[in-house]
Image (tube, rainbow, N blue to C red):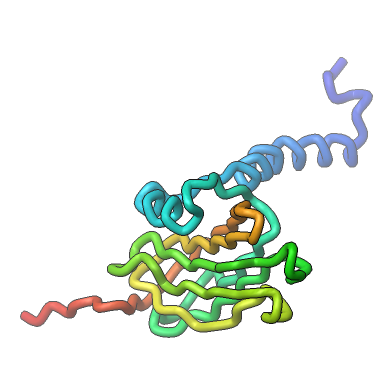
Length: 158
């Protein structure tokens, strides 16, 4: 008698799917920030440890050119005087200058949302970091594959 004799096809498929997705969900929940950015993150957060959540960084998974990549950062915040985002930092793992941008907000900003275009030198991980009024820090990352790089890429002439 087979081990799977009492298992339905649906049960087997769900079991296999959960076995494949469980490690991926665990990787997403673990905060894996590039080591190169650690000093910049400490500077921006004042030494506080950033946590995953509240920040949603949206970048295309594939960018045809690194010259102009659409970027959106949204932070869940009521933007009230007692609870608001004070700054949003965009950091780049492989650009010559790793600080892409720093935005400073207050309760009168209305929404904690940034829509912009950024330059990327290569395929890399981009980090969005939000610092709140209470000192807590939240982050999200996105990986972008760039087919044509920007940011001071030198051409070799032969």
